[in-house]
Length: 334
Image 1: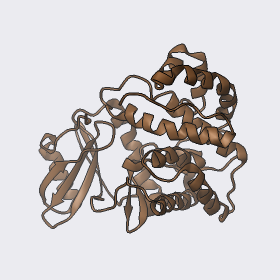
Image 2 (image 1 turned 180 degrees about the vertical axis):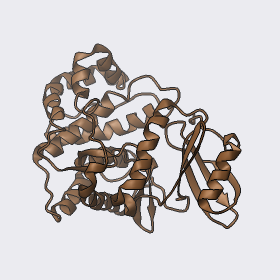
Image 3 (image 1 turned 45 degrees about the horizontal axis):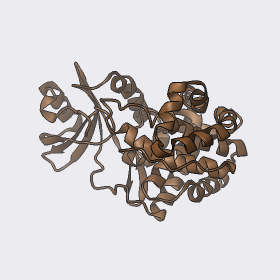
Image 4 (image 1 turned 60 degrees about the horizontal axis):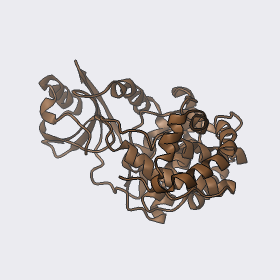
């Protein structure tokens, strides 16, 4: 099931005229672009002069969250120069009543993942590291990350019976084994997760939503889009939440990729304390553990499935890193 997105025929004529004025060319035709997990307005615009442009934003059928984050994303594209080497080119924005679109470089010919190779995964991690270094001078251009929903997920699973049951429901036939595992490890996980926002670790400009559907490879280097959640936060957040996405799609594990990230950062005299590595692993697992088993969200029909895919690698990584017993195999129905 795909998200409900507006069609190009829904776009008002006044907005189409604005797009042509902004781009200095006549629109030959345009089409809806599918992808992502929400009802964002996304289009590929073909101009008479041969150029193609990707347009994204909010319009007919967009939810409140689309409208909330769109100006934040626009500000990042407009003001944060550190993202330029790792983001699509930004051509400006257009708006009419009920519509607002950002005009971006079209990456339709750039390489998609999966499939992942070790070469591509390592390149992505190196490019993220270099972006983090560049962004250190621009942290004042974004808001600080919010603690809620990041450092308290295992605590909620322990204290809330509904949260606990949503998580255990992911194991079905292995539920008893999963419950025994959870009871054995959760008091270890809770205080480690709670350390994730400690200020005595490297902080800076982060993307905060890196996963395979938010990236491409252009001429062998990483390009990230969907910058709506960009903020000031622990640098290790970006890679930590990215690792389960890569592994769930057949790519290398966190154990292979994190040392490369740390190596690049160390070459710029940026080092990570042990608690930062442990807390990101536990916080990532807690994030997916507290969400993957919950009921589907009608306007985001594929979200729970993607979260379940990433939960397994996140649980494996955190258990391995901390020397804890491994959880049983997830055996939920798709």
